[in-house]
Amino acid sequence: MLQTPTTPETETLLMALPNSIALQVTPEQFTTLAAANRDLRLERTSQGELIVNPPAGWETGERNSSLTGQLYQWYEANETLGKVFDSSTGFTLPNGAIRSPDASWVSRERWEALTPEDKTTFPKICPDFVVELRSKSDKLPPLQEKMREYLENGAKLGWLIDPQSSRVEIYQTGKETEILENPTELSGEPVLTGFILNLTRILN
Image (cartoon, rainbow, N blue to C red):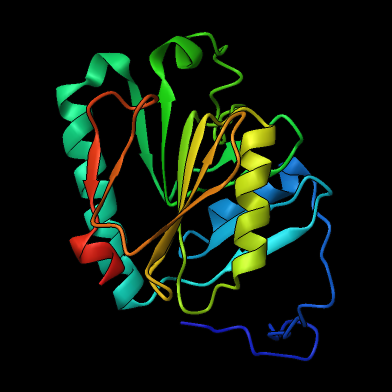
């Protein structure tokens, strides 16, 4: 079997990209990149900048499993109310950003109002409910900015869960950000009727 020899023209090289350098991508280019890099969590800002998030460590993965597991259990009993999504789902927000919350929910009324074109790949909608779970590599200000972006684009309720400081920031339409220190549970009311998130395995 013949093999094509590697030459300077055909060799693939890896380039490290400093955080200070931003790559601009179109929505179409982002879709192509996401399909070719399924092990990475990619996002796109409203200005078109590409954000590359590495795979989560085991601690974050374990915490996120508890989060999505509890949310999905609630969803199974309340399926008629809307749809639940995990961290692998990207959404195209009204401002053009493509974001992937760690967990999210969209009301059935808003989901069914989307056209088939709106639902392709990265649905053109901001979830009603979003959760961001801070990992050890995440800086807090960008996550807080992302939470505000969700609200500005249509989210009604958002939780920023920070295991590093054992606190939760609650973002809600028309209200000031509420900070809870060492909470044991969170209520999804009034957006997620009857949903209570147990934080035992998430904040500890």
